[in-house]
Length: 232
Ligand SMILES: CC(C)c1onc(-c2c(Cl)cccc2Cl)c1COc1ccc(-c2ccc3[nH]c(C(=O)O)cc3c2)cc1
Image 1 (cartoon, rainbow, N blue to C red):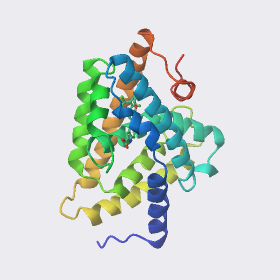
Image 2 (image 1 turned 60 degrees about the vertical axis):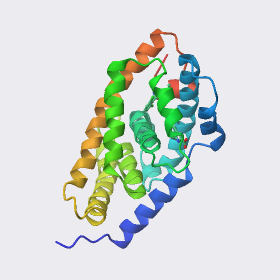
Image 3 (image 1 turned 180 degrees about the vertical axis):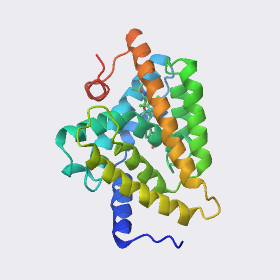
Image 4 (image 1 turned 30 degrees about the vertical axis):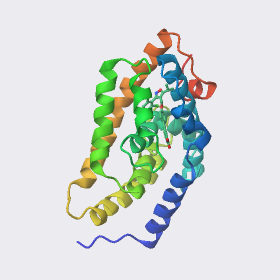
């Protein structure tokens, strides 16, 4: 049947995409990725700084998701804590698949590869980056997929499951229509995007182990990352 994006859905897409483009890591932070030192310690420190800045950006973006601020306050925190890692995988994937005009793709990849993380985690991580790159997502799809990840009702400690589910479902409907309209030659494209969300959950589990291994090697995180990842 004819797929039609309603006026309300167009407004929803515009609000999300504008917020997604407005909230970016400041240049002075990402520029540091270009500095000379490439030791494992230096790479870890830089990635920690960029991740901390990305979390701040993520919080600001999330506040612009229509309906998010109307959720129970504790649920807002639960959604942010539960989705931060996955949202950062999606954001860093944009940079590493050269989707960012001034993205520091090469140096970012180098620093991630040499940041003291175990190889068992490195392979699935870079397979994910490759699979995201192959999708050639439009900016709208990137922004809406990140929003869908944030509005996942099954995160730990979420109380009003239905309220979050309603918001996520309206986002899923928008993404489904966008995929049909923007990838007419790929009827399975929407299903492939949702498959990436499943892969993100797996990476999220790997990430928890990675944090533990970094901690045992006495790596330090910033207060914001400790808070959002329940570290220390
Ligand atoms: C705390 C640090 C060591 C960390 O722990 N896990 C991860 C971690 C890892 Cl590796 C992988 C995936 C997720 C996490 Cl959460 C990280 C580093 O996390 C990030 C790495 C890069 C970026 C990021 C986002 C947007 C960007 N734009 C630009 C630009 O140049 O414009 C650079 C850039 C970098 C964000 C988080």
